[in-house]
Image 1 (cartoon, helix red, strand yellow):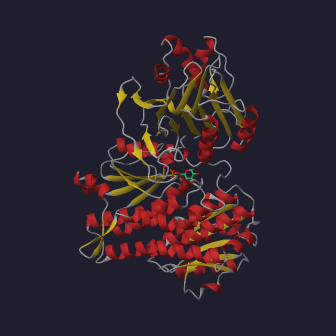
Image 2 (tube, protein in one colour):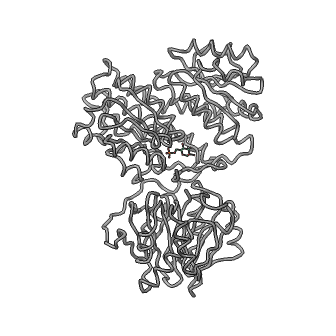
Image 3 (tube, rainbow, N blue to C red):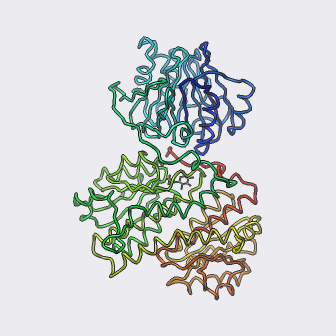
Length: 621
Ligand code: G6P
């Protein structure tokens, strides 16, 4: 997945590149490197295995100086995470430098061919073939860098976002995109290239989205977008509303904690313009789906197929309960990496809902494209404007959550779930399956959620709910079991995933009723049970399941509804959430579990914002 950044202009490039990499470190942190072109034509490459801090230390010694360059932060795919495999990579002469996010699938054949021609390789990466191919093409194109890059890309298969600089092309930066993200930042007398918007926000809010199969040429006073054949493409910049501040930590010790606290606002934003007042009553408007509706595609639907990975798949599982209830349509939740290698039964009567906050998850993209090719209409739910999934779909519902920098999904989970609720209500209204006042009643309850979330956060911050101290106490346990029934079951899964991802404590999520069919054997005093037990149709059943566990001396923590005076008899610790309709309770019950995972991770000294082995945007299959 990796992050790439580039700069060309009048300023000292090194600090700009390092700052951009800092903001992209969530995309991978196995190694980092920069190439800076000095005024006398020296291409100075500094790269180090490990985190960006290692590169910064090396840069402080090497002091590369120049007003243009490229930078890279790596999540290793081909070749170990060592100095040699760190990007940028160069051609034989060290005249061309390349950074790359993605995978060149035919790199082995290309490397053999280039070796046979006398090229020498210095790394185990797939990326290095690009530098050598460009070296060859520069000879045949009379030194035209953009053309050499275009011809090179014509020879490769796979996925890429690249940045290229050359010693012989001062003041020129070339980028290109295929299946992984790339944007250009438009400055005044200076231009930027990056994998993601936060990397350039400090310098400009004007951004050009580079599309699939496009090449971009940047010189200080101009950006030119073209296709692989060299035909110029007109593209207006977008203006990004987020400010640099909102991509910073805003006073919190970690992005994850900041993003957990941003959830009330994020849910409010997700509802903005969608829950409206019409004739004095609340109404639902999803204008993004108008065209799909007008096409008649929604009238043919017999089933919904959700495609997603990780936390997005758990949001999809919440939606299964809601859509089945409100729209009376069967919903299947597909783990995207499994879907495409199965033999799925899908066609125009299946509504495909692709959920990916990053919009770039390769597995989700592949599964969605497959369903679409087989005729399914596709609605994408994503936080990333202009991301790949938006081009693989017929309609897009944006989360409007603002940037999420922490690798684990928190505010994108609650906003995804919110949008899925709106979609469920929309489909229910369209099909005439909602009961009486269900629509205005549920919309009102959704609008109450942000304040209810804020109450949970306030109580945690003031210590009224002792989530942090419970987390610290339990942080030494080796394993956790999370249980929930009905719509709380996906929250048990998400609670367990959060704990695994950021605290590295083993955790499993189970439907509460299934506990006795096997997993109960795992429980002992060192394996706490976390029961998601808000007021619901199945509350009594969950209490019975808790009893089965208490009889075996396991410690019990419950998430319950305010006013539940009974729960203290069954649990050692309780985190309370305000009362909400059962269907919407996941938006509240997930919050204490996010905080529990966060505080456990801090207590264990884990890197909360960048957990080991994970990356925010997984653009490889
Ligand atoms: C990665 C992240 C997970 C995330 C998953 C899906 O594996 O580490 O936290 O849930 O990708 O991401 P998406 O962007 O498709 O929602």
